[in-house]
Length: 165
Image 1 (cartoon, rainbow, N blue to C red):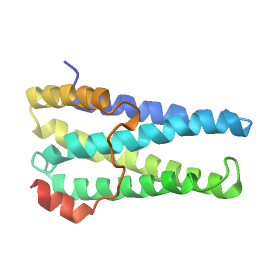
Image 2 (cartoon, helix red, strand yellow; image 1 turned 90 degrees about the horizontal axis):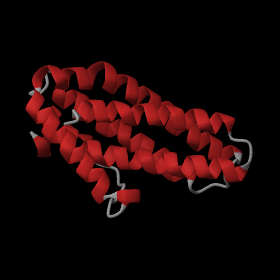
Image 3 (tube, rainbow, N blue to C red; image 1 turned 90 degrees about the vertical axis):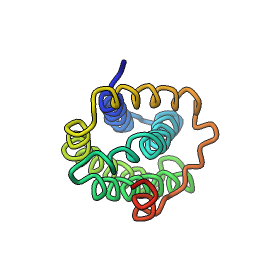
Image 4 (cartoon, rainbow, N blue to C red; image 1 turned 135 degrees about the vertical axis):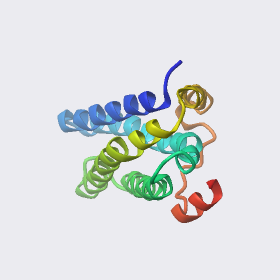
């Protein structure tokens, strides 16, 4: 069975490729095609982490509460930038500003998660729990194909941690 941390890293690699594809896109139709898929994946990924990984990191990490609070805040910033991009004409300066903000916030979040939260979780969560969460991750993506029934709303980081302790 797949370990949830490996599945998360797979998504991270897909995000990096998606942003690289934006660098190569040359016209608004191509930009829109790349960005719509990437933005949706960013939103779904955040919801999946918040539903599956972070409730357990809070309980299974040396710095789980702090890492979770930080990650929820990062997700909010990414969601906000994605939402902002949708308010502007594709390829416009305002659109690019929102997309670049999403990229910067995402890059920072991935680095923190890969260097801090995921190693902390791997050190403290059993292989069985990681496999169980991996199965839940795959099920989540199947149940929420194309973001079906997901709200994509910001969450209060402190409240989130309190609710999952």
